[in-house]
Image (tube, rainbow, N blue to C red; front, side, top):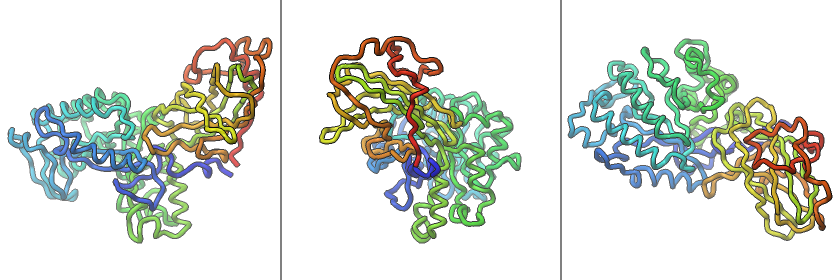
Length: 472
């Protein structure tokens, strides 16, 4: 069985997501929503996060999901979301009625507006950078739908100087939570200096204008700007083009581009795909079994996929030191872009689970190339009495009822992935045990070492004695 078949389709921070709501029609771990700028700022230094954002974040987190949000000023065919204080200060708006719809576009180069946006972004980051309820933030704000374009009303586009000020403000305000900008920014000439920022990209025309077959397609633009390997450190996301969401998984596909090819090319971590949750006949619940299965398999294809291939649990004593070694592979298409903490748990029949510790292993350092990272965890005074234990590895979700990362192992369960059995014996540690240096070839990276130790040799031939953990 392919390890990918073992992993859940609702693994955190990957897969498909709907607009915010309590949907149970398709597995997911995130929800998307737009947030109007006027609901978040009511004066030059007055921010209304408690009323304008907190209820949404709490509602989404209450369902065990992380949020993806985008703040907008101009949303075609709806009311604009420009704070009244800016209009009172003289901010001009221009009506439009074109192929994108109709609306009012603000003068994005108005100094009062840009200054207010910079102040808002600084306050936004100060309050929410690193907030575990938020998975990703799309920069938004500029252009129709906050997509950094005003097509076909090109004359309404903000200047490069304004774009650079907004990019700088976001880049300065967010160092923990990942931020993304619409790939449409890459289509402007001259272009803002986005390539110099710690900012990922989202493609909201996915499977329609994604593949590098035309110069204005997403991946053509990424290649032209030498950004086609950016996914190795920063996320790509997007939305399946709404016109093709119902037919993208038909056979043959009704979308202009093949979904699997588009995902494999762009390494997207996740996609907004509301049709799977709420469409004709109840979204994917109205599809036949084969089409639904194709959609679920495609959701799993996005993002990371972790697999524990080997583990070593050498016997130790009740008063000794526990040494644990694992190999972890990422067989997916992207890294996991955050360093959620690992946990090691011991279970024994008739006893409560014992948390042995949280090794300082950097999850984001496991590359999405199928190679294995080797990690070692040393626990002095582990506190376990003599007996036989099952040892589990898990990566809990930082929100209270969020789903933990599921590994692509058959031994994955509610406690985590079962690494194997550990025997704890009575008596003192054996003479000479724990002496020496790390075995040759152990390749202990800085990320994989909880602390420098003098008894890693007690792991006795780490590479030679790892026990395979099979996927099936």
